[in-house]
Image 1 (cartoon, rainbow, N blue to C red):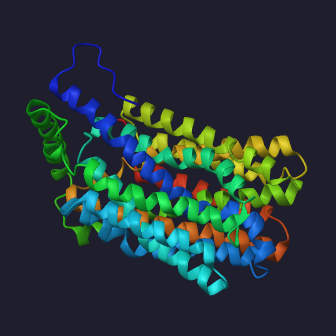
Image 2 (spheres, rainbow, N blue to C red):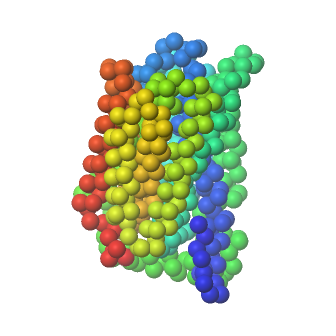
Image 3 (tube, rainbow, N blue to C red):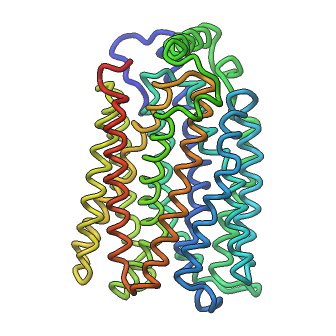
Length: 433
């Protein structure tokens, strides 16, 4: 992921390389915990029903979806706070809050408590991801941004690779009066609180605050970032409120809404699909769950690298979306054929994740600084409502029809429409700066 320099590295080259190694591993680890804490409910569901008779597919789908309205509450303010105030302070507060709420889910006793805590978890996490995206613009020039974004968002498939086995093992615990699923929520919530506190000491807000850069390196990186800002300021001299109403920003939000619908609809229900279709034991399910995110991780890294290499964003966004749509449509017809089901899910997951590095490089092409920060917050906020739609729709379609096939078809159509919207915008073609 670190840029490769064929000749003796300049001060700017050294600064770019140091930024990758000093910042991205910590950002990556924070995002791993964020993603596990919002999605580990899909693993816990495999045993929760035995202790909570009210925990039906519909309740699970609706409760999973309640995360996303909460997420909308602070997504735009969070991005603006990072732009105007401090990334490390916002991230610390966010991680402390979501760690406490995530652990508290261990003690739910009613659907209302489940819905309420999922909503509060969304509120607590709301500023983190859009804030991180804005934070990357403070450190990485446009030529490095898709790779930097990819290095961050591969945390989502990585978390899906490492967490199922750990969470599955936690489900087998039973001591101190708590069941395994309860220990699982506590186990993943506490590290977020601890790591959030460490952010205050190890995540500088901007290059001028980094002690591990020399003065020469700091000046060279700041100058490169200033050049990027000048290019963007010439593209759209509009305020934050105008940016939020920009037609292309709204269409990007729609495209992300559709993509996120497929992403979370699949992630929340994939364990249940495998259990429902093939009656597999938990250990087998958690093993199979590691395959789709492994493909997604490879796809994201390649897409981010290749997008920067070719200086092209549009097709690097559209093609993965189309691939994911086709695979989801095919997988809906594979019940009874485990090898085909898993294969198509693996390729679908790669498509669902691989469009994101180039997609998040699109807003800065359109707007500048605070306007771009606000638009990123809006796109992320509106887009993540798709998580509520995708998860709730899957649960309700399953309850109404007794089958997951209809829900998977809807997710496929959502991805296809997302590809159409992005392609029609015309942003991110190779001729764009």
